[in-house]
Length: 291
Picture (cartoon, rainbow, N blue to C red):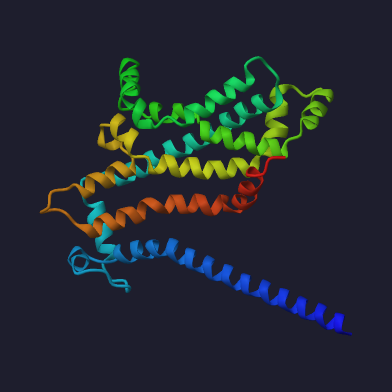
């Protein structure tokens, strides 16, 4: 009887400990979620306020200047609709090319044995460590000689070589793509092109969705390279137009317009995230586990 009481007491203590840890975990998650979402709330609240109201400090309650800010923004000289189209065009093509060709490269490293395979893998990872700013001058000289300045091509085509996406895809393949499946497809008469597009790509959908989100957001928020390459106002992306709006003459400066334009610029990112978010948890979990 004494042993049973001790066992029951131990189980009770264990259950209480698990309950406490669960409560702490929920509290931490709620705190982190609040910290992440609070700034979006501030952004949306400030987009409803006028420049005069914003100078008086923050208030947690919305105002009634949302439509006025929007009308003033649209009536201005910045081509915001062109900027939206340009950002969508560049970010979408960048995400598609980065994920597809990085998956193809990862498949080549994963499924084939060839000379210098390990060295090539190491070299790609080394390229990932080089900051964009280091290569900016040479990149500008190259596109100048190719007469590609003030075009979208230099912003889209380099996405074919995306070392970070490649590394994630390679790790994901190591955990989810057995070579026996590739061999079985070859025995059944499938071509290498057909094996990749009909078997490998569908199997990689969660990883592709995750990296498509990351690549899309990275390209959407990219200011440095587009600011160097694009010069015509109708070709500029939204981050450049936001910077131009913020650097306006102080007599014309309107913080309400800045906030409404930032709000306007993040909606497409939210939509892309909502469409692909169901793949994120499974994709990130599997991609981080090497089989």
